[in-house]
Image (tube, rainbow, N blue to C red; front, side):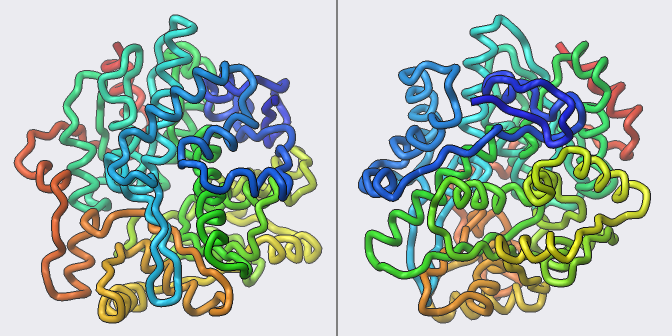
Length: 461
């Protein structure tokens, strides 16, 4: 298995090199040259596997440069940190299945990928006798999950940029209360897109990237997307253990990484009927799918802050496939985006998009109402991002199908919003209680790449 760039400027590379490269050196995103096909017989043989066993079956098809025994060990160590024996359990309420992705160390779906990626980094660095300085941008959950995935690991330092005051209080504490010597938090007076732009610009400076051994934990890193593919297979197998109906997935989406993992699963042969892309008021992806309008707007602050994004990094991976894997067409699209603030697609291309995805935007009022309604009907607490996905599924997906909604975070991570909706205090799990009163460390600065660069150089070991 070899990996190529969406912009066509690199020779094919191995999986381990793809992990370490993160963002391709030509500015594109890395993808496998082909997707391994899973037959119906193989899929049936995976019924009854534990989550780590299934993860090995899926991930190993993309990895041929790590011995099987080592890969199994990395996977087992990664998911041993989860509090639930099923890792990503599936529960059914009010006619929808909730895929609980929040049983990891930071109570968010990002743990599923970043525990694995942290262990991968440590394994490869030890093998190559190298060091790595990780640079990442976060709208909330990626930062804390990445920090907890690599804190204290030998040969790794991590620098996380987040928008100051625009994450939940728990998200901020989960990042800034980790004061290990190899962890550095930078809060920028701006938006997530400002953070992401600076990270991309740093990686685009190849001399700086090489000199300071920069690596990525954002979903621009292919290993993160790959780890997320697993839970689509896991959920599909668990649902079809019970019933034989079409299976749909509703995915609350900001940066397109989580739903792209579902697209990969479908490309591999998983019989997903529909992938529903659910957005909040920052609905550029919904506008694109429903109205052929991929044009940039201002970021709107909402009660689902992890989705407050305009430029979805992982969308480039999908565009590569949409544009018949033509890297020149991809480059032209991003020249248009930079110059005119939009990406144009033909009618034929948009017809293909609508075969792959459907989409709906859920506003803040409806999100808060869904938290109230779902609790009243089931006694189950939804975080605001999951509420967006549940509302979208109930409104858009056929009730006779199996509607799987990805629960991306524990409600306690957004307790202010849940309490605003319900009028009572959300039970606080022990990992969140322990955050209060802890010392914190964070550098607050303007979204100025020169200042960020200066901070990095001063703190890189």
